[in-house]
Length: 253
Image (cartoon, rainbow, N blue to C red; front, side, top):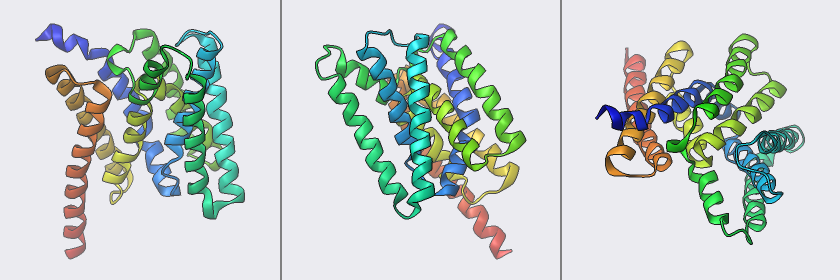
């Protein structure tokens, strides 16, 4: 049993790192009403990875990371311009950007015999195969993000920059689907809570969900990313119902 748990030790640490940054980021995304920014920026970062692979680079090397970061920053800058110039249709424009980035990746990988494998990895992630080196890169990236976030606050431009850098790393750890779920599910579940109670509850939800999803993956031989997404969603429903009951009880009092 201990040996089996060792299999999910590094993936669980990766989950803790993702939760640490994505809970506050997700609350800000929900507050701004730009729900699909995470999908779009994650997909654009993934497109950067695909471009690097298309040019003959190896997945995970520093050149590929550079392509992903630059792509995500350009995507975040583009989406920032949507908020500035076309706020009434920004969600539609973000959705269009996501679709264009996703299909561009498909076109680039159309002739690659491993194209389907690359696309699956970017969407569903390879959480069970995360390495200590990847965790180190994630920790070094996330630490200044968390410090700047809680010290200086999100800020408009700072939010987009921090978001782009964070999602660039996260999508290579966990995939587009799990990044989206890690941002939005806790944010929705704790939307009626405020202050420290909201953040603490969001962190608790995320930690329990990653632990439960990875254990389900281990026990039932399921792919880790989709398993964590489902556990996140189910746990989020439970937490949201509990928060709603508490909210109604406080109002009745």
